[in-house]
Image (cartoon, rainbow, N blue to C red; front, side, top):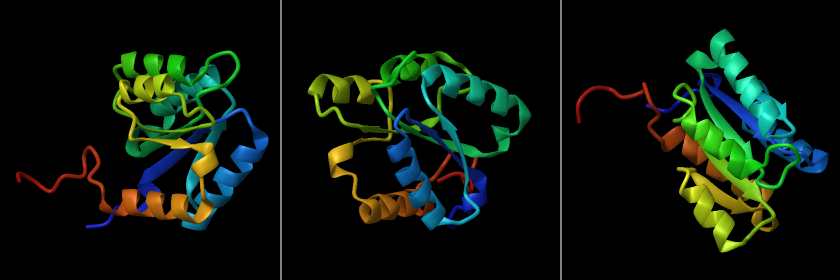
Length: 148
């Protein structure tokens, strides 16, 4: 059974307004009523996640689209804090970064990300197809239909 988009909330953690606009457009193409929030750095993202988990995101699957290079708290530090938080540590994260440095890639995967997409490879149509397939085909916590 396919997942409904109403059960997902995307959090774009990005400091570049052009990239934010592009990601928002892609998400709206998935569904014009898709839920998403914006954070401009890791500090803001953690605050939002912690506040929203208490107030309403608890019933939604949060998917984070994370930039690595940001002010105040970058992506690696954010991932470290996210994975250390008992309430947030299973949150799904896709890294979208200008960095193709193997150290950044390995460090990100070491913190259990779902994927690492270099921004220079980010194609709107392919990313939309990836997200649609991920949302429709993937099993998420709490969505299992019994033993298997």
